[in-house]
Structure formats: C-alpha cells, structure tokens
Length: 287
Length: 311
Image (cartoon, each protein chain N blue to C red):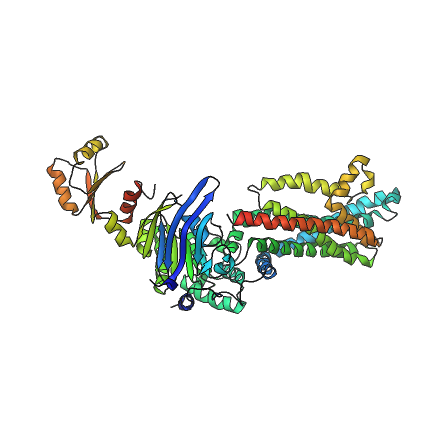
C-alpha cells in the first residue's frame, strides 16, 4: 500500500505527550527557527518570479540615474551646486534614490503579498495549521522583505558605481542602511496590512504616503529648499533619515553622532512595527 | 474504554464571537483509530469546533485536551502531530504539486530527504504521481482536494482533521476522495470530519454527533442514531399542491409513528412502508408519487431539529 508507512506512523505513536513522529528534534522549535521555516516558503515562491523582478531591479536605477542624474543633472550643475554641498547633481541624487529603492522594495513586499497570503490564497492560514505561529509567519515574511531589499539595493549601488556616482568606499555601508530603512517601513506596514480587508487601502497608502515621501524627503533636492514650516515634517519621516545616512556614506561625509541618531530612529520604528505585527498577526490568524 | 485511548476530550467547550455563541458548551470524546464526525447544517458550529481542535482558535471557555496536551498552552506541539484539510483550498497555486509538499513539510521542520520520500508515496496514494511537476493552478477541484489530503499527511499525523472534505466537488470526485479517506481509516488513521452531507457521514463515520445551533443534539453510530430517532422505513408521498394540506390532515391520525409535513411532500415514519402505503390508499388518499425507503441520518436530523440538513 502506497501510504502504508504514513498510517504506520499514525499507529506507532500512541496518545500522550512527547514529540510526534513529524517533529524534528525534541520539543517545540524556537521562534528564530520557525521564522526561518516561514522564510523558506517565500524563497521557494520567489524562484518562480525572480527573472522578471531582476529586470525591474536593474532597469529602474539605469533609467532614473540616466534621465535625472545625467539628463536633468547636467542642467542643474550648470547653475551651480553650492546648495547641494558642492557635489554634482548625480552624486547628490543617487544615494537618495538608493534609500528610496529600499523603501519602495519593502513597501512592495509588505502590502499586496500580505493580502494575498491572508485573504486571496490563504497561505498564512495553511501555515498556521502547522507548528508555525503567527509571529513566525510575520517575521519570516519580514526576513524575505529584508533579503529582497538587500538585493535591489545592491543592484542599485552597482549601477550607481557604474555611473560614477559613488564618491567614498563607505557607500558599501549604505546597504545595511537600505535594509534598515526598508524594515522601518515593512515592519509597521505589514503589521497594518494584516488587518486590512480590501486592497484599496494599499492604493491610498501609496498615493498619500509613499509618493509624497519619495518626492519630499530630500531625495531629489535638500529639505532646506522646502518652506520652513514643513521642514520638521520632512525630518520626521523615516525616508529622510535613510536618505541622509546613505548620502553621507556615499559622499564620505558621515559623522558618527548624526549617523547613530538616524540609525536609532529607524531601529525604533522597526521595533515598534515588530511588536505591532506580533499582535496583529496573532489576532488575525487565531480567531 | 481505557482512558489512554482517548485522543481528544472536550468539556464545556464554548466559542463566542462578540455576542454570538458559535459553540455552546459541548462535550465529546474521540478515541484512537475511530472516524468521528460532526454532522450539521451550515452555521451549526462545526467549523468553529474544528478550528479549536486544530489549535488555531482559542476556546472562550471549557477545556480541550488533545493527545494529552492542553490545546491553548501546548498548541504548537499539538499542531505538529495533526493533519489539517481545511474547508477552502489553501494550496500554493503558483507552485508545483511537489513544491507544495516540500514547502509544507518544511513548516514541520522535516529534512528534505524525508519530504522527498514521503512525497513520492503520498502522491501515489492520492493518484497524482503523474502530475508532480505540474503547477497547482491547472489542477481540477477534485485533484486539489486530493493534493490537500496528501499535504495534510506529510508529517504522518496522529489525527487527521477534515473540514467539509467534499463540499463543492462533483459526485465522481467525491467518491474518489471518500475512497481515499476510507483507505486511511482502514489503515488505522484517526479521522475527525465535519460535514453537512448525510451520505458522507454514513459512509465514513464510526461515530458522530449531530450539531445544531452550537450544541450537540445527539450522538452515536449512524445505525444507533437511526434506530433511536427514526423508524426502519419512511414512506414519502407527493400530492398536487392543492391536495397537499388536505392529505396531511387525513393522515394526521394515521398509524405512522410520526409524520413530517415538508413543503413539497409528506414523510411518514413507519415500520413497514408498503403496508403503510396500502393503508393510506385504503383511506382514499391517492398520492401523485410514492416512495418507500430506509431511514437515513437526514431523518434523524429532521427529527432532532425540525429542519433539513441541506437547505
């Protein structure tokens, strides 16, 4: 009989405590192990779509740096770049876009895929029936988001270097900054996304959240160019901290104190998102 | 029954959602190797009960012990030893049949080699071996159901939970699923299933409870329930709509143990259907059509709740 030993497994272990025949090792697995198991689903899934996504990851920086960095940049540079800190517009813009790429990738991974997993395909519910806990599903998805952010940022940085837009070896340190910027968005956004019933919420978030941040967080021009009253708002946004850090690293102007402040802000947001996600994933999946 | 044979024990098990009570203080015990069913209409509380047994829904009150462990405090350990076939398909439709089992096996922390070996065997069992490399999206409803069953067996569970396992399948696909579940049962796998199909309950369940409005109305083997709550035979009579009520009145003091007046026909619960039909004709009652049949769980349900299962 084909399944005989599956049945034997069921008959072999009588009732009573102790690890079941399916459990690997002794006792329930810890949170970290469970999150990695959840991550592996996303990795298997990504094998189907990575080719298309790589194309976007490479094309985006080439198009943006070409059109804005070189095209628009030539025009800007002719009018003097004192307000940019005396560097070329390309060198000013590229690290800003690098941080924005971190945000963009993280937002893509933490909105519609969450809705698909909890509502359209019910991947989360399937996994919640196994030893995986809601918190592990949340953190496993965040790990995948972090990996995707790292991947896109690394590609962006390579294109930046090819365009000659990197001025310091410290630019390599911008990669973990991009991941952190991504997590500062992804952790709270995933925690919120799991509570949503309709994907129209995400369109609103992108229209009124993502796009204004992208345009006004110092990516394309210094925040000091904005009217005075709105500048504090820009400084409070997570993207500005990511942009400021990436830019100082790429230009080689980073100082320790300022960098630590930026990092602390992004870490605080990530931690808040982690706590919220633990709560909201549980509430949604254990009803 | 020795206590060690009890795999699931529920006492005063209750689930409320806000002001709505989905499961209202039910008690039941499930023993090793049996196929146990929750039979009832939609909204009876079957799925809520099933989710509590699956340790993904904390009970509002009462106790639920599964495999000797507490369903809330030790849910993770219990889930590792359960197989779950949910009501809705939750397969990863972008992945292949084989990848679905790989992903799911990893959730249980199984090594790749173990998953590969079981996958071959399980796909054989559910007759999907030739579709192993196909994307799930392309499978028929019946095939998806069978794949879900294979997936639920990847951790060699001690108890298999099936929530409405054949709802939405065509008759032929249902029979294939029933056949596979019957084989599992023969091999000693403990099955727990919910259904609103009385034929499914009769085919698969050694023992079942009839649920209605969050409570257990009765319990026993299908045979016991029919013996206790119905007569050996049922005489079904249909009339012209204009004669329907009149015939019901004429038959009211009839020697049937009980008469159910449905919208479209009369059900007479009797020991001998043919004799009852002859007697009815003797009284000048001439139905359009008549049918003598054995009592089923549908009749038990009608008796217990005054309503039909599949409305």
